[in-house]
Length: 180
Image (cartoon, rainbow, N blue to C red; front, side, top):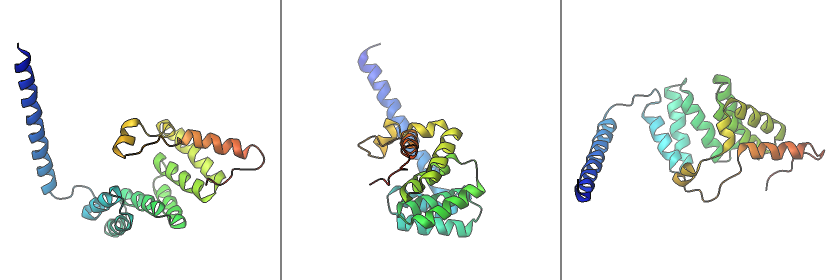
């Protein structure tokens, strides 16, 4: 078989896959919402992803009003409040989420990050530790592909590294210093 015919075949397969994925996207995009969060939840996720946190919060709250038991909307609200630096409200929201879903390692990690930022170091240490024990991958940080998709230039400190830092500072008798 000639190399040209191989490349043509690959090209046709690629074009076919592109059209197939477009057709699937169109099909899925025209149907009704299939998750219990409804259209408000979908809009909230879109706004959150775009960094429009005030709008995201509005739609997460609408989703919660329409579907009070939808935990994903409550998690989204907690993360959004954290992004808006409404720390006390975010802490209450994470507490509510963890009361409803005490097996959410990601929620423990996020609450730990929030408590760390608020200077609540013993609580942050406990939450980081619990999150990492529940899901060891959380302690590893973001992989290169996720950083690429989120357009993050530097590799941030992992939860495991931050936990070790807080523990070492707490062990020196002076306690952790608030990150600047």
